[in-house]
Length: 167
Image (tube, rainbow, N blue to C red):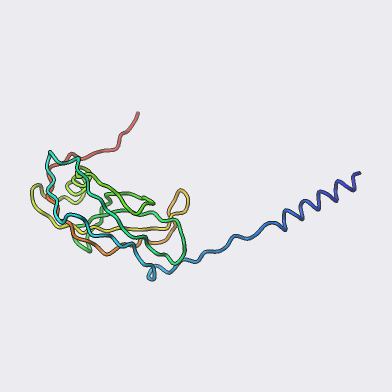
């Protein structure tokens, strides 16, 4: 009886070990060979943000980035004053290939983070950044940006929004 128990235990362990497969290794392209997301042209070229139209929205959409393998990606929509300038995020990591932003959100970022003067038309560069996403953290792979499109924005004063702190 004991011998049968040991034989069955050994057979079960051998069966489990034989059934294991090594996961398939997926190779992504080198950062310089990645095809970045392609941001679609916007319906409007110029936006004048006022106190009365801040609930209106603007739609950003883009084609998926190609990393040479099917991977989980996170996209962000970012704006800058120049092509070499500091990029500020207006839409944080999303898995979708489109995003809707209210004029209020856009106004807050452009006025507070890019320090654009109130009432002055300013040309912005809009980008879509993509990064490989793995679970709760992004992989250590550089963010890849689309070619920029231009958007002229006239902002109004916006209060800075601070995160809520509970004590």
